[in-house]
Length: 625
Image 1 (tube, rainbow, N blue to C red):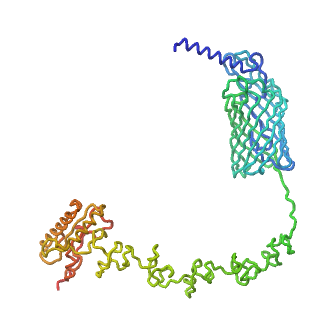
Image 2 (image 1 turned 180 degrees about the vertical axis):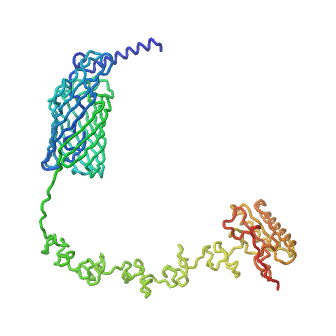
């Protein structure tokens, strides 16, 4: 696009904008008419907020009165012919004098008259020739009357709903920007509440003004009909005498004329402030900025209030002496005012029915009137000593008050279920009632001796209590399988046999070697084992060590033939260095001639039975006989 074309478009668009601006004002030439400029309308006297109603008024005939000061800085600016902003109204200080009268607890009638003690600015002629005149000085604004009612809720409840209407009488002057010159009416709805230390209020209304004709606007801000709103929130401190928090007030212009929509359609202000109650007086201070530069939105606003607003008092009527149960004893002295009774010197029992055992259950309802008891829905048990499990033994003497049992001379067992073997499991649930045992989820094992591997052999007689195995006359093998992974080893419970003085494995040991191979294949988590060969002390030590090494190698080779990877094994011959039993008997020497499979990787936690060359301590052989 050429520079000349862009310049032409800029000029054209500027002309259109200026034309729209001119058209948007009803008095594009001549003097701009005045209107009620100030956007701030104070709440009725006695409210805890500056702009919203707290709806906490109360009393049959209650009066509140006071003054709310409102200083607004630059609430209206207009650009002059040189495009400079000129404050038509620079400073505006109003003293809102008002009063509110509460009647019938829920209704309030009020009035408010703004008295402008300062109302100054500079007159300005706009680019289109329109003259905007500054106010002439002090004066009054439009007198406002209000009527509102609290429809739902108590004065200090969590939710209060109210509705009302405001009516403005044009007592101000349009020329001073303090009046529309027409009657204004605003119906509105309010909500408010107190939740703990938190308080809130909100309102919405519709403002109708007789000045709202032909879409009239004041510097692009429509005047006249508007949807108004306000919201306040804060916390109560110092025994609810101080309330602090923000307040938002604003409006939405309702316009049907040719005014350009902009942010100036939505005037609004933010206030931060608080109110403090000292006896019958209420003090308030607040301040905050305008949220737009709409007409009447001050760049900054400061508020202060002093009000006389005594709280309503309600005198309670004197109590009427009654005798509700007709027993001749007045309720004020009757401990049982709704149940006919008899006189008693004890104030706690006076006027109550007879209760000989003093258990709180009247004799007429007490199945055991001479023995203190407890309440029971069964008339035959009402007032009798408690027996929760109904086993005939009172709870006070029942060691098991929630489980039916039998009498027992031992106070610790009286009223408890029978338990002949005294293992803590009642006989009716004990699968082994005459043998002490342990609890089990399996009814067939509950109360029986512990058998962790469920092989039918009690743990105290099971050489392998965690691995199921068959019975064996040898206590060291009883309950053990041929091969088991335990104690850091692959334990075998059958001897691997060799030819005498040789490393040749006898055929009869193929079965146990095959079982070891199957175990290694099944336990892939075992990365490496050490096949150890051991001998007794018969013969030359060096010879025995070579023989044990050869035998360990033979077993490892046999496992390779049964499908075990060689890299998972290493062989070690210890000779006679690590006996398990003394070598002074045939049985001891036979036990020392053995092959063991120790798990190397992963290393067993706690060591188990794994023999490590650096730490191994051989059994000291008994002296030769």
